[in-house]
Every structure is written in C-alpha cells, then in structure tokens.
Image (tube, rainbow, N blue to C red; front, side):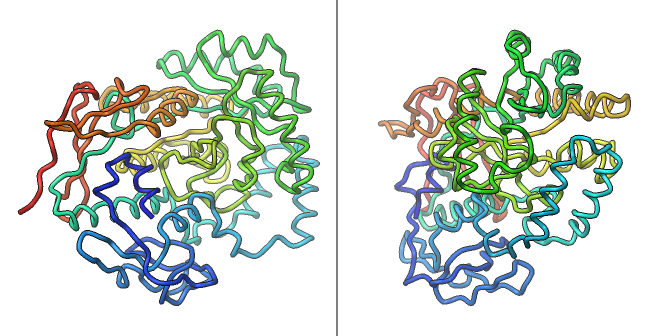
Length: 459
C-alpha cells in the first residue's frame, strides 16, 4: 500500500504506514478522495459509472489507528488505474461504424489539406470542453492524492518535516523537455532550421522519426541530428493510426519498431497521434515512452494519466505529454499565443513536475507559427534562468529518473544521506506543512552525500 508513495517521493518507508480496510468491491467505479476524482474498487462506498455523477467521498471513510492510515481502497491499485488509464475501459466501445470511419480517415489523411483535416477534427472533438475528467488544462490527481496522503502520514507520525530525495538533479525546481514529431518529408527537411532555432536558446530536443512509408530516413539524416547534440527517437512504424488496433498486428509491428530502435540507436518511443495501450508496452524494447497525454481532451484517443511526473510501466519509463500539442493549439483552438502553454506550465511547476512539449516541424514553417515557437523557447529559457527549471533531452530525464528510483535515503548518526548511482547530483528535500498544505524546501547547493539535519518531531 505504501509502494507508490515511496516510489514517488523516495522517502524513508518507516514514515509512511498506510493499509486497506476490509474486502474491496468486485466492481470498479468512480469515487472521490476529498476533492480528487479517482477510479477503482472500494469498500463500503457506492461507486459510479460516470466521473460526472455525484460521487461518494472515501476520505470520510478513512480512519487512523495510531500512526497507521487505513483507507477503504487499495492506493497502489487506484494510482495505477489513473496512470494507466484503466478507467477508460468503463467508457463505451467504438462502434463498427466509428472504426470504419477512422480507418477511412487515416487512409486518406496524407493527402488531405490541413484546412479539411481541421474541420473534421473539430467535428470529432466537439464538446471537448464539457468533459469533467481528467481535469483541463492539467490534471494533477495522482500528485494531489499522494501529496495529501503523505501529509496525513506526517501528521500521524507527529513530524514537522519529512526528508525525501528531491525530484530533479542539482536542486532544479521542475523539468521541461522539447520534442519534435516529424510527420512528413517537408518536416524532415525543416529539421535543420528547427535545430538552429533551438540552439539560439541553448535548448536541445528530441526528434521522433517515422521509420516507414512517410519519408526516407537515411543514416545521414539520423547523424545530422545526433552530431549537433540532439536526440533521435522512434515514432510508431508508419503513422497510419493502427498500431494498437489489434493485438496480433501490434506484435508484428512492435518487432519491426524494436529493430529500428537498434538501427537508430534510440532510447525513446512515441506512438503516432498519441494512440496507446499501456498494457502492451512490455513488447516494446525501449527505455522510455512519450505517448501518454496528461489530459487528452484534444486528442483522438481520450483519457489521460492524471499526473505531471514520470512513472514506470513495467520496465518502461513514461514521460507523459503534459502540455497541448502545437497542432491542437494552432488549428483546433485557433490560438497563436503562449497563454495556454504558460497556464499549463504554471500548474505543472506548482507540483515541480515535467513540462513535455510536442512541436512538429511540419506545422511551424510559417512566420506566425515560427514566432510563437521562438516566444516559447524564450519563455523556457527565462524559466531556466529565473526558476532553475532543468531543460534536458528526454534520454537524460530517463537516466536520471532510473538512478533516482534506485537511490536510498539512509539515516546516519547526525542526519541523512543519499546513496546510489548519481547521488552526487541528488538533493535531500524536506516536506512540511504550512496552512494545511504541503510545502517543500531543499538546499540546491549542498552535495547530496553530505549529511543533513534530522527532521524535527512534535511533542
């Protein structure tokens, strides 16, 4: 029951004692925990088929026995249900007619003008702003849930502060990554200019290339990206929208996709159009994936992982897409300002999370779009300078998060220290309560392996 909290915070297990009360319901459904909508099995509560219904509150059924927090649900199960979008299985299945229309659309999509695609997509996405779950424009349900339970555990243990391993290296306040999905030959040929723009702000990025059918991917093209310090990742197989449609076909395609991973020397993967089935990811031979939106109201496949932090799906690390794609911003919302991206960034930074941007070289060739993108790069550069936001390549996030997952916070005679590979970049942070909310403090310039003070306790 404590596993997801310990993984998230990397805090001493002895400070978190959470258990489950009674037998859980056979069926799954939506309920609340305080203000957060969650999904799963629960003991003693009436569950709902819809997140928009009046939901019963599991917080009211939560009890304490000494230092132990007793929940009427399995915390790890509920968190997995959100991150892996298992609540979507409660949604109506696509009809045969919808599947046929989708196949027809992706068959003709390569020859459709953007104006036609925009119209069809707006029809498909109508009433997106009426969806109550996940929360728009950023869903932080998992982060809020774990934060609230950590705070409850601190109160149960009478702790003024609780040590944990800070989320990002070198005391960075948050993280941002820039990614580019290359969809056409025109986009491929624009990548050099895009790298010039990125380099003018000292922001490196990853390029997700489609291995088959869309355009040729030469060794020289791959080398031109890597030679400049950028990253290459694999994007789907042929971008036809069918990767996850049928299990047998997926297995065949996954084998080819994995071979391109080795051919390109890539560590990361992204599925076309952000289609996904996280239960099948064990067949993908990649270190990390970037196919799961935080909230997918403006994507063809609805849902969302409800967190702004990386998380593991088996052996694969998920780097969720936490901001709106450029195509959706420009062509669905008809917005060329930074307002939405800034709003999302602020919400993510409040939880010290990951800002993951998708900018297509195919959609920023015109003057207005290029100006918007330059403004975004300038904004991120300001965040790096003024708020100590870390802006690495996705592969660097993957390596850091894996190192952090294996680090341990060890109590010594006069404090705490971090042990494990990469600990020289890690920082000991402290969670404490202020006006009923969790606040964090850390020492960005103090080496992680140096002992830190022991957290105080209330009398």
